[in-house]
Each structure stands twice: as structure tokens, then as C-alpha cells.
Amino acid sequence: MADRINLDNVSIILKQPRYPENIGAAARAIRNMGMGKLVLVDPENCDLTKVLKMATHFASDVVEEMEVYENLQEALSPYNYVVGTTARLGKRRRQINTPSKVAENLVSISGENLVAILFGPEDKGLTNKDIRYCDALVNIPTADFSSINLAQAVMIICYEIFNAGCAESQDFLPRLAARHELEGMYDQLKDILVRISYINPENPDYWTNKIRNFFSRLQLQAREVSIIRGICRQIDWYGKKCFNDGQKSLSSQENPLEKR
Image (cartoon, rainbow, N blue to C red; front, side, top):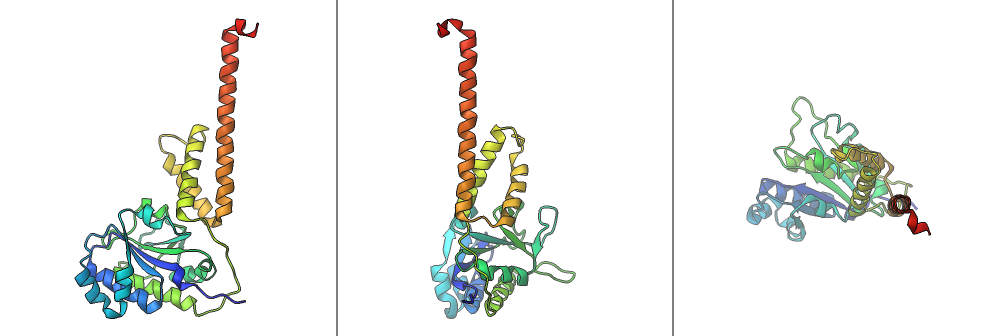
């Protein structure tokens, strides 16, 4: 049976929005295009009077039901797939998609997965640290002037997602690992790789980011993350066993009387 994009599973997340009018306009865009919900992370100014005025009564329910978090990692925790928006390009932001391409990919992903579309602050956008949490990046093409108002950017992305939902797709993608599952795996991998001297302990995040980029392209499922974490636990156990066996052997050599 043909599947369509599941708009209920797609949320818009605004990190540190500065102006309540942009929050209200984003809520209105979400209502216009049928997205799931609005999430705020550490908003600089969330004057509800101004927010509701811009949202109008039509989108007041989006404002009333929006979630607010203190930090980004907590906000992204339940999501299986995160798309970060960026106006800046660079060596850490190479694999950039267009809004239409991202929307096309979400048709199959959104069926069984919670999707977050992440926007940064109006003045500086997402940081490189924020980008680490993203499975994909999207850039809105412009002419000479690349800066787009936050609410306008939200509307453009929401429209492309809605438009992609009008087309049918035969693809199906099972549930991906949630953000909190992936972060637990990355922390465990970093710890193991540092202890076996595979990555530099003085700058572990540099190499961990390369691992993040690799796994993001694979779109890991929850059971695959469980397998990787199981391998890490076994490496940890075996490393400790070898160390303890070596200590016992060394101790026996230093105290030959123990063998009698």
C-alpha cells in the first residue's frame, strides 16, 4: 500500500529564538502546513502576548501545546531523525540538501519515526556543536543575500514537507534509533576508542565527529545501535580481562613462592 508523509511525526524545533513574533509566525506556518508540533529550546524572549498576536487564534492551539526545554540535547532526545538548517557552508557542513530533497527523504522516514527540523537563533544560526546532533543538513538556496528571516525559513521548509506529502511513495523505513540512543552509543564509542588508544584523548570529539558523520549516513535502527553497544561492552570486558590477567601474571613472577 502506498504511503504518504506522516506530518504528525514532524516537529519544528527553534533553538534560542530571540523574537516572540518569529515564534508566533512559526506556529502559524506549522498550522498552515499541518506539522506535528512546535518545540522551543531556551528562548530568549517568549512573550506569549506577542507570540499569540502573530500566530492568530487559528494557530493558538500550537502555541498552547508547544514544549519548552532548557537544553538542546534534552529536546532532541525522543527524535529518531534530526534535520538541521544552515545558511553557512564549510568543511563541517559539506553534505547539504535542498528543502525539496530533504522533504522527499522524509516521506519514507516519517512513517515510523519522529522527525525534528532544527532551526538556530536568528543572529547566528546553529553552531558546529549543534550540527553534531543532526542526521542531515538543509540549506535554502538564495541569490546574493543568504540571510532569511527565521519565520520565513520555517514556512519554506514546512511547505516543502507538506508538498512532498502530496505525492505517494512505495518506500518504507522502519523505526530509526532515537537521539538519546545514538548519543549513548557515541559516548560509549568515544570512551572505548580513547581507552584502546584509537583516538587522541586530548581531542576525542574531532574523531568522534567523523564517526558521527559516518553513522548518520547509515540511518541506524534501534536494534543496530544495540548491537554496536553490545560490541563495545564486549571490548570493554575483554580489555579489562586482559589487563587483570596480565597483573596476575606479573604478580606471580614477582612472588614465585605463591606457585608453591
